[in-house]
Amino acid sequence: MSGFPWGAFALNLAWSAGAALAVVLATFAVSLRTGVHRIVDIAWGIAFTAVAVVTLAASHGHGDLSRRLLVAGLTAVWGLRLAVHIGGRGRGQGEDPRYARMLAKAPGNPMLYALSHVYLLQGALVWLVSLPVQAAQYIGLPLSVVSVLGIALWALGVSFEAVGDAQLARFKADPAHRGQVMDRGLWSWTRHPNYFGDFCVWWGLFLLTCDVPVVAAVCVISPIVMSLLLTRGSGKRLLEQHMATRPGYAAYQRRTSGFFPLPPRKP
Image (cartoon, rainbow, N blue to C red; front, side):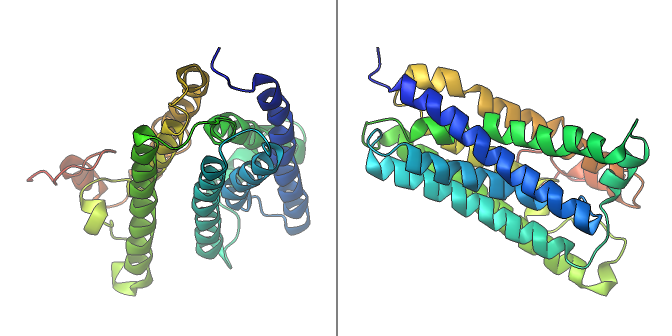
């Protein structure tokens, strides 16, 4: 119907599931040796990169080469930048309080609970959210105007993430800011520039599937799931629960947009 190689794409779904599973199981093995589960956050970006690279190899002979290389490259840049940032941020620190609380309340064996509710769940989410990354590499059409818009949206997202992360790191590095709320730069326009950046990245990658509408219809679940994770799942919602008791945070919430960047509101 669309000229899309559905059979090859279906086989790729198995290869990508194996790639995501291999990353999360390797990370789980490391966590058992170190006793620290926060490293699973580093594996998030690495797993997406692994899926993109495996798909690039598996799609040989199917999709448009420039599109394949572009999609794999964009995903790897985003994923590896995120992994390096999270790794650097957590260097020398102990367990993340989120995982400590989760495992303290875990029924049965805490390690098996972590495997099923953290690692394997993360692998499944990587596989689902990466559907556009996989499908786009099997599209045989050259890049279009919609594809360019997708690249631009991806670039906006990565820029927001990188600049927001750098601004927050500089703010936290100053001892004078200990206990204060970061409300400068991009953080004065949105309380979550990094999550908004992720949102843009994954909707941008989705646009690279839109030259074949039936493929886009299959893949649209992916940016929707990522958007829900960022706004209602383990992203914005949990972070704001953690920050709610910090002095000044309620006032920051009143004057600053919760997600989409907007000019700060007057007190």
